[in-house]
Length: 252
Image (cartoon, rainbow, N blue to C red; front, side, top):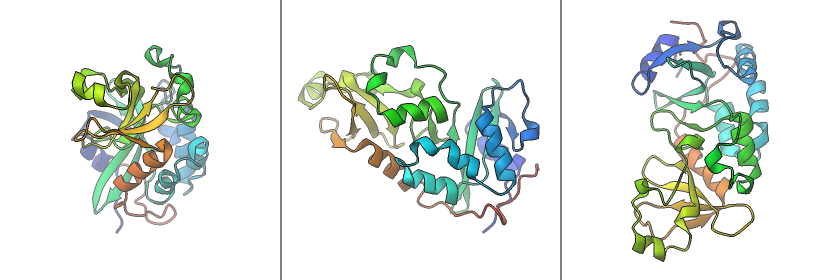
């Protein structure tokens, strides 16, 4: 089934969750005064020619670690658009259809510097995850819930944060130090994929904190679960043909 992705339809959908000011679909529409990354402009230009080469190059640094995500980008994601909010903040939207309903993944501009609160642990974060945040997106999540993808660093938190409501007895029974377990992705249902810095040195390890079993976190392969959780979320996405009938990009 083909769906016409016009500006107005997308703006109407987005307005349920945020306050969009403008959508940019072509390089010619990019205001030089806006902080739109050059790579995003290249993606807009490339997809106007019915290609996703620039998109593939943009994600190249993590492609080997996120095969299901790359399949989603090339098979299911419709042409990207740049969202401008009233604050002039920009983000790159990845629209897709699932069972006839339009959804969006949103990627924020890459970090310009490591946030002060995470500088101490930054060298122990997996290298390709650091690359993702410094060169691709500071967070890439399902827009309506800010979930099912790597969270923006401003939404990272340690399990010792009050929001997780882990009492002292539960914390004492856990096989990790909750003040050293950093949540970096949530599934929208209360569960988190984390990085565990409990060991004195070395690269942080993957851990899932299940909110219904808070005292029994599960040690996991971080990249495998990150890719799998996103894959499950977009499993119902409808495929799209970039070269024939993706709906075009004319404003509506």
